[in-house]
Image (cartoon, rainbow, N blue to C red):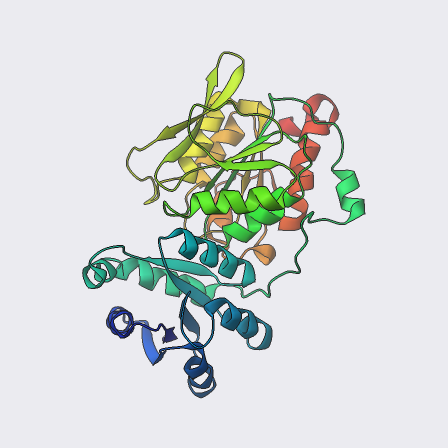
Length: 356
């Protein structure tokens, strides 16, 4: 089936390049191109597109306002097209909260040359969006869970020797937020790899830090991993867990991409298998591809307890499915249950759950 794509961007140059990229694919076609959201609204009615690409800042109506109305009145897969600027990253993160599936970054220089180089990435993100589950934006709730569920997570967890290791990709920004919001201030240290480019990870970490009861930051490398703190892999480097005496530390590595990604979930999980073993819980969330599956299996074989997000709660079930298929996950559960299950591992007497 041919994927029908509607382009919304105020730049005629970008609209033309996007048309060229999309129409060059055998499985998709551009059914319309709009310079602003008001024109886009009429074209949606006329063309009934499968996927919409949306610029983040446009005239006549702000892109976020349009996206919010669209997801409320006519939910559909949306891929944001944004710039690698502080403003651009903040707006894009907000767009993901509102229900956008993914985003494509505009190159900083030589737009036409850069966008054509991005052709494969753009096409693949549109394919993923066409298959993704479209979700309405959840109501804002800084503390995330109900009183009852928070009470169930409030057992003392005072041990810097315990860790939660998380990997995610497409749909992961919201999944990670939902996971971290439920964690109590004294939870084990958390290390996270989310497939994001440089320039977005710091904004994402800062956003999470404001919403969560734990502290969240972009990892700098060489930090001691502390309880009640989460460390997000920066977009330019792999994040690794290492030991320094009795302490866990973060380490950054600018080695080549693994599974086409840097940062890579496999790199983080494999380092946790070596450094933490049974003191860690591995969690793989929504995402396209197989990054993280092999690393999670290594964590399991090293004694860690491993959790995968279930298909019904994933935006894209690729990464969890791959981990489940090779036997890397001890347990599979909806996203809302994963934080509680991770914490339960550490509060189970004698860590019996670790030995499943």
